Length: 116
Image 1 (cartoon, rainbow, N blue to C red):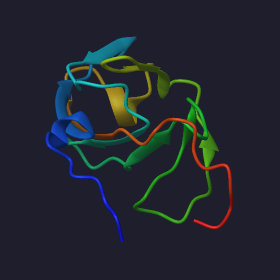
Image 2: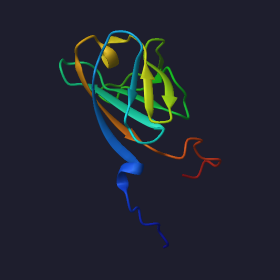
Image 3: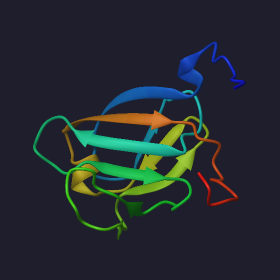
């Protein structure tokens, strides 16, 4: 099986710490446009927030419960060239809270087939 060596893993995965501001919050410094963003509040017990480029912005999953995909107007607003922009949702951007995002570059468009 052939494979490609990744010489600089931070071009494909990066962790970003940020502080919520309760409004529009542009998180930069990721190093690439993320296609999959997993956000967790480090200051309080909040649900995990997962967004991906295939589903699109405002479509979240929560890995710590069994709820289905939900549309969330104040969550992730945009995938940017060096990070992402958040709205005012408290689980991803509460004013003064500390957050972590785990960010993956995953080729943006998804798969054209359904065989994995």
